[in-house]
Image (tube, rainbow, N blue to C red):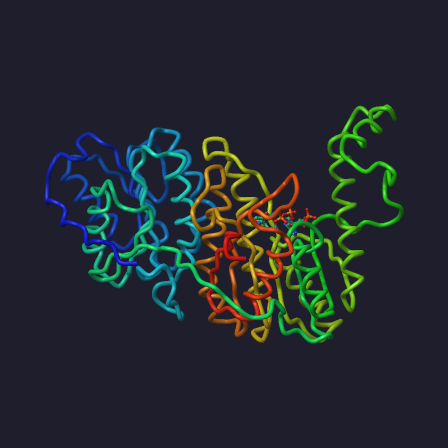
Length: 444
Ligand SMILES: NC(=O)c1ccc[n+]([C@@H]2O[C@H](COP(=O)([O-])OP(=O)(O)OC[C@H]3O[C@@H](n4cnc5c(N)ncnc54)[C@H](OP(=O)(O)O)[C@@H]3O)[C@@H](O)[C@H]2O)c1
């Protein structure tokens, strides 16, 4: 959507008198231009290559460097440190052309370096309402002075939205548009079709695997880090967590009780899901591995192609839940969650053959709106939505980032009932065309 144009900032003044700004250098002149403008408003400005001390204002231009690689997840640490020091202004910049990477066809406007920054900014804005937060997407074909001038204007516009794109004289925001989709919730897969689901032995990805198998009878390959359950299941007569805890304590166990309970429940969930899948799928195979490792992913896809001679679809549903406010979320935790989603998706998109029928990444609402306590999911989901425009240039089939409200029934009721959610996803794969779709529950 188009936003109102910004007023031209005054040449000099005292708006930032005595304020310390760090402008993380882009190496192309934007940082120097902006530093000059901030100084003419009374600020003290440094332009290091990374956040290197306390500041009142942080403008992160790392993603505008020529040939930059992704600034996330590494840039999280500096942003978090700056916030802990009492930050008042935060601007993170990407150079995806001012249109958030949407028309990317290669070359200028590479969305990769700044991927995920919007999501991080949206969450910062929610967790730190006192900070002026802006995620700016700019067109690096503009002159450094023009880009810096617009950034300065954004810093002075206290009422603006968090996510803004600048392309030439146009100032844009992003908004969701409601859309209905009709058609049968059946993906056109032949019975000898093959679908790989990362995280597909558990949770909502397991439910999607079952729906694919039920509606097509295809071959299902699933992957998770947990070793494949073998032998007799542990404590088969004890159905729930409380009972397992009582039994372990009664047996004299004093150590690793909680870990044993968790392992037992995960093992049961995997066994149950593989069993249900085998009732419908032509074949089911479980692979134990970590999707963050690109070689593991290449080997996995190679193995699937060797055994089946084809791969029709991939669903990447691996995810971790380590929700914490930024104040308490360590860079290590942020990186673990971020890489599970983003590095996993990139490795899969890279290893897949271009004739793949569909490539789907599952995410949550944090990737669209930002959610308090979910800066990692917000950044990762936003990164996938941004990178999907690149994956589309290589993969000829359906590329979809599907962002979900919570699934659940009974005591854990969510707005999305699992049967309806699985059907909505299959309908979207079969009949939709948008790269990013948000499923809120209202329309399913
Ligand atoms: N559940 C919901 O209501 C909901 C709502 C919105 C979005 N989502 C999204 O949907 C996805 C699945 O959610 P869920 O609730 O079903 O999660 P879940 O039950 O915790 O399942 C996550 C799956 O990911 C696998 N996994 C985690 N890290 C992995 C890694 N490095 N390599 C390979 N597999 C890995 C896990 O298996 P191992 O532990 O064996 O590795 C597990 O099978 C998540 O990405 C989440 O963001 C879910």
